[in-house]
Picture (cartoon, rainbow, N blue to C red):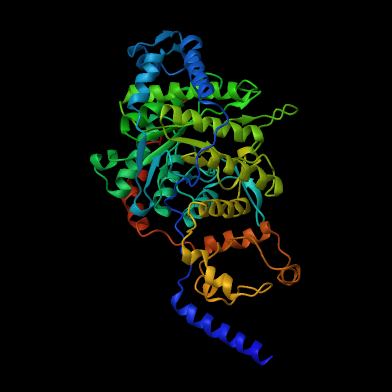
Length: 513
């Protein structure tokens, strides 16, 4: 007993001594690089065949392009145009791919938040485009400006969310004024790379001007890298509508980035096979990339895809399925084949922040990781196939994202870390809690969970027996209560206030039809 007490006292002294020199664990989730080699589901010959088929699709079958200006741009470059169908020769596409940049600088008012958008980078964007929001406190409800601002604040709070997105649609703001309030909220509350909807040239011009004013940027400053990013969704199969084509042109000419994102659901808007769906996705992406490069040579552009399958009984989109993951990996192979950075996406068809939702999102997160996606969209908060943004879902997804980000820190295998002396110090059947090796490292050795409860059943019960969803409610509530506007926020608000009021008095800007 005396020896045991002595050992305990020694352990206590060791711990006290170690506390004084052992720093608290620090994390850096801002600049992440993929830690693993990209995987493959197709052979090199099969990837080349899918690419060649995509070229045949846009050359022989054509793309329906609704915007006259876009058809004129294609025709001037040598494409064959018949009515609203555009047939793009492979020589035109090949030339466009040669001028599209492989690395793009994403700018931010906070230089520490700036990113290199390129293959090898690992970036995440929260759930986007949701018309509804849901949480345990207030239930499910239509998206409004308050919810949009709240979800932006949550995205700003966590470093593992790298780019802003249109998380929730603020439906209480008239559509001709909505882009002013969405940009105002981003510019004041966040210091990360910004998102702009492509809903017509006038709205886009307004948004660009608000960025310049908020951050006091000259025209040269604004074109020195990308300050605003948009997502361009083709209408699968093989159609590019007016606002999307216009967005490609406007963003290219302004030197800002478009992320081409065909939404090809195998069995519905695309062939039922993985290879067939990817061939269609690839053809639509190539057409969009080509239009951007014809609009301005060297314009920042991202390859992308958000392809999955449907439930063949109901027709509903499915996410996180084996087919979804295979399409992610195949899309990554195609992106690397043409040498461009690219976006992927997670998703959840589940109607609640439950095991199904977690499984769907986490499977697709790992799909993006195995595919080495530059950007994974809908990485946190997405529910109901995109119809709702869930606050509790967001927090639990952040846990998964941070765990994945931890993979980017490689372990060290030197003698000190291997710890032979520590192994030798402990008799068979003993434990390592009080070894010097442990004392020197225990504060920083392991990831500290955000949501997960690692206590035993008794302690968990005494603490209220809360589920991960209920614990997440406490976390997002505290995040919003403690949120502090970034240092530039007040200045940005002052800089854009007069412009917004003047444009509203002039009637605002309605979306392009």
